Each structure stands twice: as C-alpha cells, then as structure tokens.
Length: 412
Picture 1 (tube, rainbow, N blue to C red):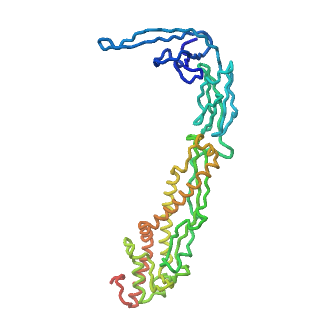
Picture 2 (picture 1 turned 45 degrees about the horizontal axis):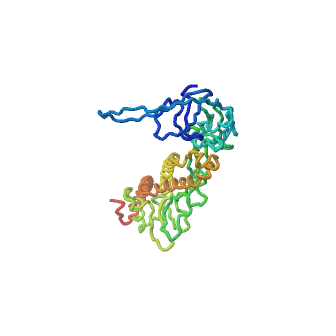
Picture 3 (picture 1 turned 135 degrees about the horizontal axis):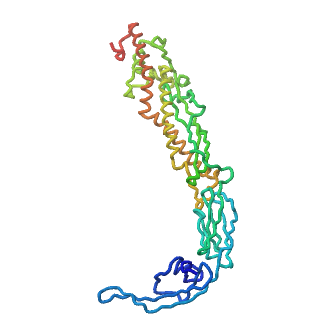
C-alpha cells in the first residue's frame, strides 16, 4: 500500500480530514483526537506516525524546532472498491432529475464515494445517492471515485418533446398588416382642428399587434432564444373623405374653387418655408366656423407628405427591430436550480410573453414618435414641397392673367 492513497480522518463519518490523499505529511493544530480513522485505496498494512514538535526562539532570535515525542502505529485497511453505479434515467431531458446509486464491495462504504460532474444542480442525499440536473444537451459523464478506484457513467441529455435546437438566429420581424398601409378615412371628429392628411399612430386597434413568438434551444450557451413575428395596422393618407371636413381640391392653377379673395391665402399655405414649420404644410384652412372646417389642398401632394412619414416609419421600425433582436429579453439561460420548469420550451414562451409583447409595442410607438417629431415632420414637408410649390406658381400665374389683386407671396 502506498502512502499516496491514504486519507486520515478525525471522525468516523469522514467529515474532518486530517491528512488528504497524496499528502505525505501535514502540520496539524495542537489539539489532536486520540482516535483517528484511516481510509486507504487498497487493503493491506500501513504505518502512521505523529511527531510532536515545539518551536522556540534562541538567543539569536532564530526559531528552532525541538522534537519532544513521536507516536507510531501500524494499521490494517480493508480493500474496498466500487462494485457498480446505476442510473435511473439513462436518457434524460434538460433539467430532468437523474439519480445515480453506487454500491461498494464490501457494502457499507458508499458514503465515502466522491462524485463529480452532473451540471449546475447536483447534490448527494443521505443515502449517498447522487442527484443531478443538467441544462445542456449532449453526451455527459458523471464520475464516482473511491481513492484510486474510479468509475465513469456515460449518458445523453436531450430536449423535451416538441422543442428543437436553433439552426440559425431566430427571426425578429416587425411589419404592417396587409403589407402596404391603407389610407385613413377617419381623421378626427369636428371638435379637433382637422389636418388635410394624417399618419395615424399604430396600435390603436386593441387587437394590435398580432404576435407570433417562437423559441429554440441554443446548445452553445445552454439557453432559449426567442423569435417574434409581429404585424400592426398602420394607416395614413389624405383626409379628403373625412365627413367632418369640407375638403376642396386644388388640382391645378385653373381650379374653379380659386377666387381673387382666397387665392393669396392658398398660395401662402402652398409656398411654405421648409425650415419653419409654423408656415404650414400645404393645407389652407379658410372660413372655419364650428364643425364646417373648410380646407384647400392637393391630394397628390398630401400623399407625398404622408408617404414620406410612412417611409421614415419603415426605416425607424427596422432600427427598432434590430434593437429588439439584441434585447436581453430575447434569450433565457436555463437554470435547473432556480427554475427547472422553464426547461420546457412552451413554458419559457409563456413566462417571457408579456415582456416581449411590451417591447414590440414600444418598438412600434418609438418608430411612430420619430415620424411625429420635428425632424420627421420636416422630412415630410421637404418631400411634398416641390409638389405644392409648383401649384403655387400656377395659381400666381392665373392671378396675373386675370388681373387679381397683388399677393406678396407671388412676387412681382
């Protein structure tokens, strides 16, 4: 028997180690038990001795040890080996509890077996059964050791039924219902100062957004990865069909609704300052009283204005989509200790659904808020300006031909 395969304990239960395996000597505290227990890798006879030493400082202040006693004992160890290791579930799914049972020969030494492997959740019960849960799929190994006697148990961890591994990053897609947004025919009621066109805020329909959340298992990180496909209704367009608005179309400079009395106000509205938002958007409110809200504008130009909002909305929504894709809520590490029930894919979706839904709604709203911002509105005014400006020139030319009173916005 070699000294490297001997352990010395101060108690029969083997909880207080005095001399560990592969240790030839060890300095111990002053108080040493009268009886010690010896564990050896194999049967046979060995020699255990203890030397008592007192150290003191001499006249030169140098510490000198002084051996005062030595006790030596022969011991005989019984040969104990691991007879078998049984596993109750050889093909578990992630976080499924697996129990390993060891038997020694002779029996009764199972409590001295040391275990390793088994993942984030691994405990040894009072019968020295090793209980393990693993969050990662694939081939796994649990090892039982009794000094130099080592036994490996190989098994495979798989996903629960109806769950699958990721073959690529899950898709995150935010879109608009029906592909192309539809024209709005309901702007506001008559208590509101109606515009000539509108880009409606999404998610006003309680059914929006329509969500489809899926999940797959990322074996490289032992976690769930979420994907989402969402659609929401986004409407925009002219308000020429608004029943609360008396909308008058200016198709060109010869429109019949143009008069000497109103043309200059319409030119002022059409030939607005792109930088100064207070100068208008090509919508001329004239003769407003109560609910008879009269507007002069051009439908094609309004479409250009609102379509730019839609274009910006799409660009911003793509940016929000990328932010959502990288949001920490789109992944979930599997913790077999704290939340073993979330090892099932459908439970993981149910647990994270509310957070993902809120993040999707925020994404749509943030994209719309950009369109409603000063920058978004300036983009739309710039896009529609050429259309409105050409109409203003046509109107001024007509006023000149017909000898209408001068309008400062028409120039000389």
